[in-house]
Image (cartoon, rainbow, N blue to C red; front, side, top):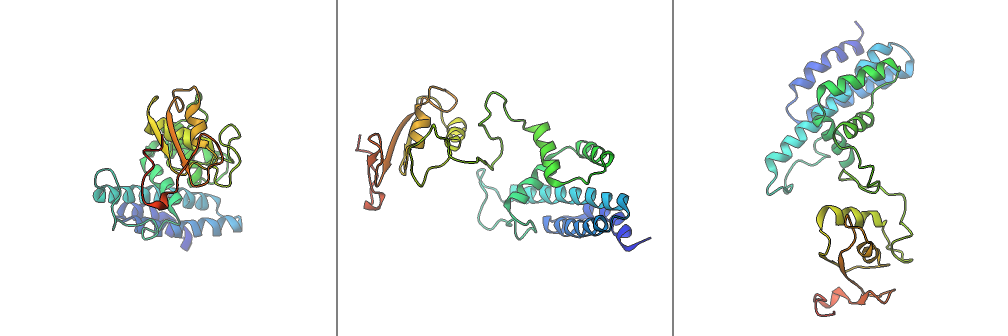
Length: 243
């Protein structure tokens, strides 16, 4: 038995025995190296595929263990200072940790179904691919709200021309749409102390109860619109008496 085959065959047991996210991530890194090595040589596809599969399993275990550690240290629904960081847990970055947490929440049977499909297509399973499966099964985006994001990572290509006038600090209005949808109700007051080009104002004015029909007070040190009031926060007070 080759060294690579032996390591892959022992990986499942090692993953099951891992008790810390860093341990699972160490196994994951070794499996990734084996998979890449064998795939590059174009040999032992079955072993390389199994290495890729177990790499995904190790990622899921790392995410599961990291989330358990976060739950133990979480107070009032918020992560506390001193909790193990993604870097300390062996994740390349926070995005990778988030994907692995999603994998850990995925039903093992669904992961196996995904592996079977990939093997039949002669393609290696990937963590991002598994994340897409999780999205399909657990958090499918709303077809009636294509702007809505269901994760804690919101990606938009560029600012929406419908919201805000030209300003170097403009953000995509879809960010405001998501914030309003998740955190506010129609008719409630929203205060923007760094209004910039007025993106928040324009979103709140929309006749849509999902994210619009909100009251909005907007302030900026150098207003570029009449509906934005001048206020410099460095004066040490809040502008509640400006309207």
